[in-house]
Length: 363
Ligand code: SAH
Image 1 (cartoon, rainbow, N blue to C red):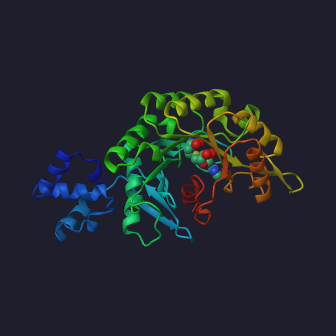
Image 2 (image 1 turned 120 degrees about the vertical axis):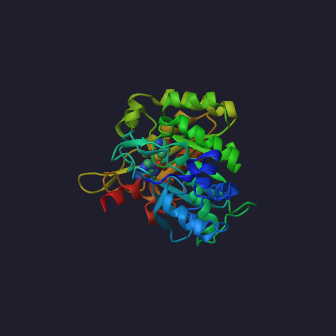
Image 3 (image 1 turned 90 degrees about the horizontal axis):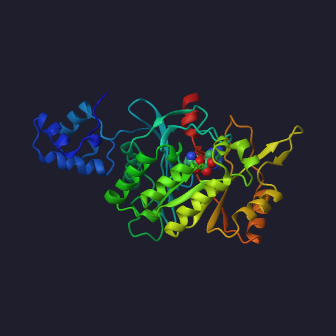
């Protein structure tokens, strides 16, 4: 396995460069390119050609390598399948939005949570990602924004070639890898100047992990993947609910958001099923459940993101009709609950959690 330049500290990088018979200052030049996300030494334009070649032979730049890059038809979404040094694969997604450039990063290779609608967990958990491996996903996206073919730019942001928002919502459960996720976010804040308020961590509801975030004390955004308004229903689709009940999760989440005066994000996938006659029936998004959800959330400072389910072949749910989605939303709105329907992005490139990684394994 080749050494990873990005993982060297400054002294180690200098030694590496000097052992190659190069002057010390090359280390600072290389560091600058690494911080910009250079995928190889060949891209490091101010190094002499022979050094670039030598470097690419003996080392790799980042701890992630791009295996596949998919561009959505509208150019707004770029999805990367990345390979780690032990050949595990992860995904990250760059979204060019009107409010900035947002990157959705993975926190684990695979996932142990076993949610019944999700592709990421189908092959189980392989391992936690290191802070370097999570951070490198941002650098890959940053390089793409500056050097990729797509020229769409986010509106209204002065630094619109930069990654401005981070969502830890890719493969894995961030609060099962809290220490490394925090290490990554600290670095994104200090080295990339991304403010806490532009970072979001999404959890399926690991209560002690939420308290760890409270202890950490940074005013990031918290999203809870709720997906059902009763424990009975939620336990049928999210095994974690057998351990941490809805009331406990929401109490911890409220404590977090009240501390930082942030709005809690509630993720709610809309799931349907086929009955035995092949008709679509609503699973977690009947009008009754909309009323129950409204009661559960009344009085909370929260925003409900409704997400039509992205089909995953291995899962036996279906996506409900647009009408059903709007009916569900209308009831929440009537009850005074802030809600929006998450615009589907990149469905043409398999942007649902874990789809790309899973499909690549099947190829
Ligand atoms: N484990 C964390 C973060 C990763 S999942 C969590 O559960 O929040 C990110 C979000 O995508 C979660 O809300 C998850 O439930 C949702 N998701 C998973 N599979 C999906 C699918 N096929 N379609 C739409 N959303 C999905």
